[in-house]
Length: 69
Image (cartoon, rainbow, N blue to C red; front, side):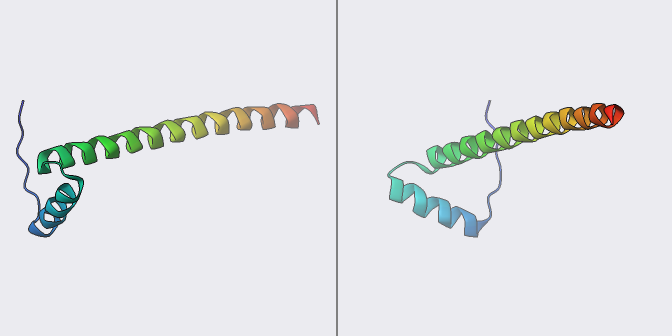
């Protein structure tokens, strides 16, 4: 499945330069950049879920502590 997107000219100039610096095609550079970005977003979402879970547990522990006072 192939999709087409429009990349602003200023950004494509940067892509061209970076791809050339790395010795890879523009397409390979863009795919790598997107995969890297998606990985970071997934890690951020996972951290957010973990922090929310810790906050929930912390709130429950605080309520238990207050009942014992």
